[in-house]
Amino acid sequence: MKFRGLLIAAVVLLILACVLYWSDHRKAPDTATPSADASPDILKIDPATVASLTVKAKGAQPVTLLRSRADQWRITTPGTYPADSTTVSGMLSNLSPLASQRVVEDRSSNLARFGLTDPSLELDITAKSNKTTRLLLGDDTPTGDAVYAAVAGDPRVFSAASYIKTSLNKTLSDLRDKRLLPIEAASVSSIDLLRKGQDIGFARVQNGWQIERPKPYRTDSFQVDDLLQQLTSAKWDPSTPAPEAATNFAHATPLATIKLTGSAGNDTLDVRKDKSDDYAKSSAVAGVFKIDSTTATALSQALDHSLDDFRRKQLFDFGYTDPDKIEYHSGATSLVLTHTGNDWWSNGKKMDSDSVSMLVSTLRDLAATKFVDSGFTAPTIDITVTSNGGKKVEKVQLQQTGDSALARREDDPTLYSLDAATINSLTNSIAAIKPAAPSKK
Image 1 (cartoon, helix red, strand yellow):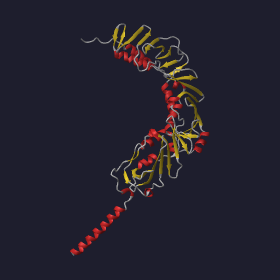
Image 2 (image 1 turned 180 degrees about the vertical axis):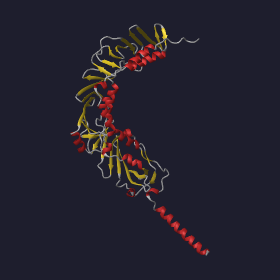
Image 3 (image 1 turned 60 degrees about the horizontal axis):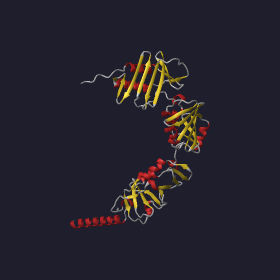
């Protein structure tokens, strides 16, 4: 019985030895013996040196991108389109460096085993020196969490994380710049907005924007900047077929026509609404498009602003810096405040800084609820604010009419209508001004 047991054990050991020998000499691609450096970089590309990039996905047309002198990317194959520079930069970032999980084979003699003779994805990266590096991505590894990779001319086969393939496998639609107006907002010098029969013209000035049409008005530059931002960031929806977008655009209701003028020339955007969807036709991008829902809402809101929404409603422009001098006159009340260092003074007396700060805040926030054309006859309050080291002097007159008031600035025909809460805040702030408390010895 002992002899029989020994014989069975010997047979089992022999079988195991054969299995181990077979396993060592016929390993699956993903279990091959790695080199001493188990996870070196597959390649390392300096994004700044790349002149062109070609994406060759199996079963799809190659897409070639070319970097311009202005460091912008443009698609040249299969057509000519502006490229999404952010997407391209992301791809190049993944190649700087492209890390491996490990080396599968140091010197492979059969790339077909890894799907690398006919790769599912090839990237041709050409440097400014005209040297081209070909990155090959083949089959997924048996575990499914990695992909085989190689560089043409390098005998090694690597495994790399699966997300690498996803991040590099970009289609023409992925790589196209989907902005309807692919221009830089800072390059725009004027905006013409035609909506609901109203033609509004904006011109960029030194400190912001100026409304030029229908009349020159003080301008809320923040609102104009927001409009420009929405225009230059609005994107088209690649999931809507071009014929469908063109059909819907043809019978949609016109919302606005915008013309941007800048260093790159003139560009026009025609926006229309069809039920809950917005469509656009741009002179900068051939075709008619549905506007992507993520940008359509903000763009529609910006375009729906009236002329008054773009007009500056604040009465004073001294901003968030403290003024140098404040003069207030109303009937028997006369107050002159001067700012020296960190202190406020009036008639040689140091004033309570908190009460003056409250007045400054109130003056800064004085704003119209609407604009009117007439009604101002005689001022009841005169306010002069001097700021910027005496270089900026703003004079405002107010005429109280019950609890509300009308206001006008010197050399400005605009009449500002202020509500009761605004006037009460001003009069209460004036009444609260008081001398500073005596210092304690």
